[in-house]
Length: 446
Image (cartoon, rainbow, N blue to C red; front, side):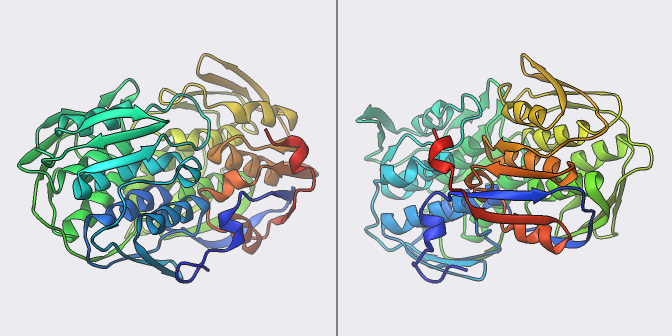
C-alpha cells in the first residue's frame, strides 16, 4: 500500500526479482479481479484537466500506475494514495514539461499529451519507452492534436507542442495501419474536452477502457457522446470540475485467470468481471471445450477445464474482437491442447517472443510472419525462462503452473507492470510460487 506521495522502493526501481514456480498443483477457490491498468492510466492523466480534486477508486497497485502518479507529482499535482484510491489535485501553475527519467519507463505516458495541451496549451514530452513488442508509433497522437490547431516540433528527443490561442474542434480520423488506436482516441478525447467548438473522432477505438475514460470525463463536466462506437462527438466546454470515479475491472487480468482455470484448476470462481468485456475470451474457451458459466449479473464467472479440450484458432482484432493482449496466454493453453492450434496477431505481428521460451519448456510451436502454429504436447517441463513483455510474462507463469518440475521466470518487472499481486493471488488459489531476489539479474539484463 502506498500512502500520500511516498512510494515504496519496489515501485521506484525496476524489480530485480524472479518468480520460482513449482508446477503440478491444482488451483481452486475464488479470486477478485483488480481495476483495469489500461483504463487507470488515461484516467489518472485526465485528472490534471481540472484544478479541483478528483478521487479515483480501484486503481491497481502496479508499476505502470505508480510511474504515472510519479509523473503527475513532478508536474506539480498533489497526489495521495491509500488502499486503491487515488486523490489528485492539480492547482493552477502545474508544469507543461514532463521528465525523461519517468516518461522513458512507460509507453502509456504519451496519454499526458492531450490533457496537458488542453489545459496549458503547450507541452514538452519526451518520446516514451515501455516494452518492446513491435513498432508502436506515436504519430497518430501527434497528428490528432495537430488537427486541433497545435504546432509541433521535435527538439532534443522531446515532442514540443504549442497552441497559443487554444485548441479548436474539428473532425479527425484515428484509423491506423492496424486499426483504431486506443491511446490515440483517449488523447484526442482529453484534448478536445476543453477545445473551442465540436470535435468528431472518426474510426474511434471502441474498447471498454475508452468508454471508462469518457464516463470519467463526463462526470467532470465534459460533453462526450458516442464512446464505444466508431464515432465519438465531443462538445468543448470552458471548464471541468472534480468528481469521484471507480475504474472498471481489468478484462485482461480476468482473461488470464480464466485461462489459468482452464489449464490447471479444479474450477475457479472469478469475481469483479464484466461479461460484455470478456465475452470474446469466454467464447473461445467454450469453443475449445472448456466450461464457462456467468452469474445472472455478469459480474462473476466460473471456469473449469473441459473433459475433452479441443484446439482452436485466434485472429486478434480490435474490440469487440479477440484482444492481442490475450493471445500469449492462450498460446500457453494451446501448447497442452491436443491437435493443432493457430494464433495470428494482426495488431502486433512481432508479439511472439514468448514462444521461444515456451519451446524451452517443451512446447511445439512454429512462428512465421505474425502467425504461431502450436501442436499440442502431453506435458511441459520446468526450465529457466525470461519474460520479454507484460503478457508474455503471464503466459510463462501459466505454462509454469502446468509444467512438471520447477520453473524460474526472470525479468519479473514485466509482470509487475500490469498484474496486481499476481503471485499472492495465485498462492491463495493453491499455487506454489515464490518471489525471490534474482541474484543473476545483472548477467541476464540487456
